Image 1 (spheres, rainbow, N blue to C red):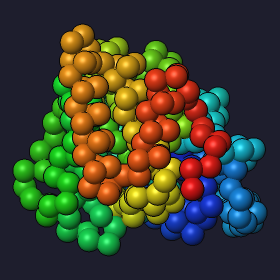
Image 2 (cartoon, rainbow, N blue to C red):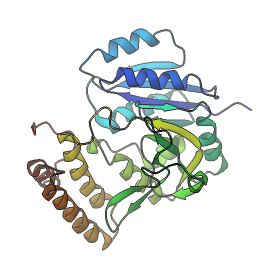
Image 3 (cartoon, rainbow, N blue to C red):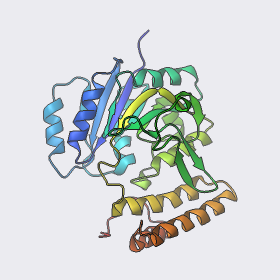
Length: 301
């Protein structure tokens, strides 16, 4: 029986070295029916030219020029739409700063094929530089706190994390989605631009009564924040603004109030500890209150 076609989507922004390393691992996978869609998201360096030159004759790799920086969701949505037009049965969202095990894709697809109520399948993600340590082994979103927890984060991989289970959050770093699910729940939320879009999408998938499954037989390695920097001004802004945005859009009843209070206090704590910059947090919070979404154009430096 023919394998279901999978459209593998990589969004590249000035990171052609990471993207090339990711593709080098993908072309060795034990799965035949796939196409890799590299969406260059308005890179300001030579990424687009280099990627076009390298993959111009590769039948399983297509380079797409988004024309501008559309953010994480926008870049992925460009790839998703093209994969749908080209008859993919699944799309796989994969961070370009990852490398994959050769047998990572089959368990994801096999799991999704088992049950029509599965909306997302994710896998085990380890740190690239510390391959014995976990970055993600499934996740949980707390409606009371408005926060996400990565199970196993920062600890050594042990037997507890080799158990398949249903979870309520999947990172966008590794997310297999049936096309029929996207047709029902919609595309990724482009008004988030960067960060928390996977949280919103996971919660939306659950609201449509689909399941999210963690399948530990699928293993990849993540270089983590290679493109934005984990403490950059932009990451602070989008993480603060969009965490509140998720609560507003996907919060439940009275727990929404609890989540607002918890997020506000935690953000204030980070400012007082010097982990966040007050001017950045202030801008993020005011933009949230004023309904400002999408890309931030005002410099915060």
